[in-house]
Length: 496
Ligand code: SF4
Ligand code: SF4
Image (tube, rainbow, N blue to C red; front, side, top):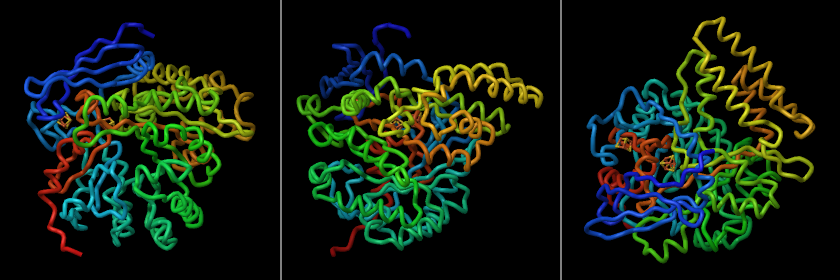
């Protein structure tokens, strides 16, 4: 690993006037800091990543994707005000978000959508939703494979099962909702209707395993509602729930270990924990910001501490780490695949297993780095012929056992066979077997106007589809574009 001190300039924004300004990333006290200065609004400092060594490790995996062949906006300049996607964007849509409403049955102080407080109702019609989805499926060279319905609270729409069916019929292979779970807890019938209509995954807002984080982040204790959601998911066959905590110092930073233990105890329905360190909406002064800023390495350090090092920061990998797998599937199938060319500092992830009361990250028995190098090697040598494909597969099958230590793996796992199945077949069934036995553990740090790095934004793979036909990276939508879109497509709400 290169030990070069972090010293880099990246384009950013003034958090007050939103002008593009340069930010300097540098190393201080073992962390990576950011400082930027606006002529009108002064200087701003922040922590960009709280562990410089991990920053360097992740940095090695940066790759450039090719973005979309059919961008929606065409100006060469003016990033990030030209989102559309434009032709300079480097990653296609890995996951699309469609806000179905800005109504909500909670009033969370941390909410991006700020639902209901404006007096304006944003609720795209079925036709508009169909057009947004078509726009995503028309993306080239890879139609967007995954859509997540969000809001506001998407379950407040009575036509959610119908919208889900529409997504299924339009060919999305992964359909999700991001929900607080209140409706799912109160209606087993809704859960069943969602399963029937093709819903795959519930992104369940889940801030902790005690009442306190809910009172602080959501304004009331809704822990028992979350338990009821899991019960209803279990009963209805919705067996892919991802727990999504918003992580904040002093609110739930002491619950990360407990959260993972809770997840593995509910592995029949919970397939992942995806932590979101809090990002700040609106203005927040320097002192308050340095007290409250929490970054991905902070989360990993908490996890280490709270799992007695069963899970450590070294067990995590940046998102583009899996990019060679896309090249491999592309070589196998001859079809273009979505490329996980997201910026390496946007997220971190791993898979863990639960065996005899212990949490075991996948890299404890799979030489993940060796596997990564093997795939890179076979892809580099691949010339596209059928014979070469056979040779490539032969090499992987031959080398794989050397990279897996079955003696350290959970007994019933048959890891070599399982990974071979996924590689050889790549089918939903073989992936399902993998997902049934593992817990996905990830974190994504959405950006705010204080820590925004436009290089991260330009590699973003999580995109909003909007009713004006645009596709906008998540972190620019929530910092810059949301207001304009919602103003344009909202109607005044009738007083209730
Ligand atoms: S963030 Fe991406 S889509 Fe938006 S203007 Fe920049 S490069 Fe283009
Ligand atoms: S949503 Fe934000 S944090 Fe996530 S990949 Fe996009 S730019 Fe990065």
